[in-house]
Structure formats: structure tokens, C-alpha cells
Image (cartoon, rainbow, N blue to C red; front, top):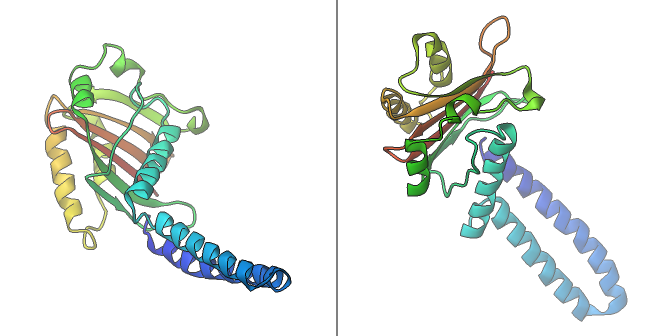
Length: 226
């Protein structure tokens, strides 16, 4: 999702909150002396700045936190995605379109696998392909395509086209390059892919598409909602 909305929100809410707290502190300060008022305002200003910097993801600490939150969202949506906990550092690439009121939109995240994870996915356990991903109980109307090796089957091409196609790349020229990279990965028999989709009567409505390329040490997460 675009950062413009939260930035505008913070630019409005933080000053308004600061003014409200300032008014309260000022009233208290008039009763308790100017020194207490001064240090209270200093504390308030520092708190507002730290909150803004942290929310806008401008420090290594805040970046680590927000990355963990984003992966937590993925793990909550697909708790049985690969059968082992997922933990990634800063994404190699991320694109998120602006979301509509009902959540429709498009996002793609590219993460680098650690050498240990790449080794694991190079030869996953025998039950990996039969058991994962697991369909979350809160999304029982969705259907799961279990993990399998590339390339995608003929009867799955509509899911691939839906995950990659009909999305403007004008504002993100690199997006098409990322798509081409994923397509090359999907053509290899060493690459793993899976998906969870919502398929109403009129056609595919939503999809979460996952690609793991152990050779290139890449994990791709695509989420499209219409």
C-alpha cells in the first residue's frame, strides 16, 4: 500500500495530538511552575518526533519492526505456508498499489532466502508437497494449490496469468522486470510454487501466489485482490 496515506494521516494527527496534549500540559504547568511545563513540552516534542520517524520507517530498528509485522500478516493469512517459521530481512523489492476501500489492490514482495532456507527448499521433506500450504479455517471459501515443482501445468496457466497479468507497470518500470525474473524461475524444475485462490462463479477473484527459487535464493509473494 502506498505510504502517502499514512504520511498524510500522521501530518494531521500528530500535530493535532501534540496541540491537545500541549493544552493539557500548559494547564498543569500554570499550576506547577514554568520549569515543569518546559520539560513536559520537551518530552512531548521528542515523543512526537520519535513516533513519526518510527511510523515512517526511517531507522533500522523501525524497519526491522515493520518487516516483522508484514511477515506476521502473511503467516496469519497462511499459517501453514511452508511448515517452518518464515523470517526475512529487508525485501529485495516490494511494490504495493493503493488499496481501495474494500481492500482490492496488488502487492508483490521479493525476499532473499538464507543459505539454510535455500538448502531446505532444494530438497524439502516428502510430505511438504502434500501438506502445504494449509488452507486457513477463516478462509474456507478459498482453494489451495499445494506446493509443486515448476513449470506450472497447463490447467494452472489461468492462475499464473491472473497473478501477473493486467497490471500497469508505468509507475513501476521495474515491476515488469521482476515478472520476467519470476517467469524464468517458474520454468525451472527446481523452483517451487503454490497458491491460494478465491474462485467465485464469474472467475478468479483473488489470489495469493508464492514462488520459491532455491537456486537464486528468492522467495516471491504476490497478492492480488479484485
